[in-house]
Length: 119
Image (tube, rainbow, N blue to C red):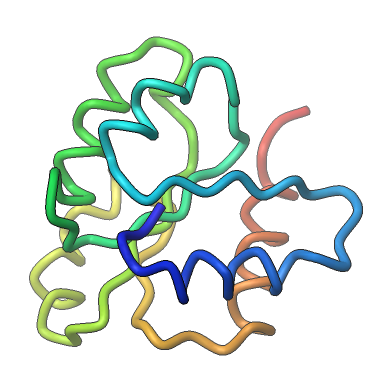
């Protein structure tokens, strides 16, 4: 989830050749929250800074839903100082990453996280 359409396209492209993954994108946090139960993702990638609700608020809302208490969440930020500021929130996010991110790095981190999840 990101308010930047270019980044949403980037994530779609990163996983386009990965048949085991289905990427669903949302531009607004409220849209993501409204549809998350229907989509039932295994993992969420979200920007920290977004206009309608920040990524951290999103994670807080997500953790209130029993079905998504343990879902891995990747928080991304284009501002490096955000990464230091939010590093203490590791219990709420699987991993905190800096944007821009190399496709191979994102693919590798997602694969690794999903492989660690119980089946």
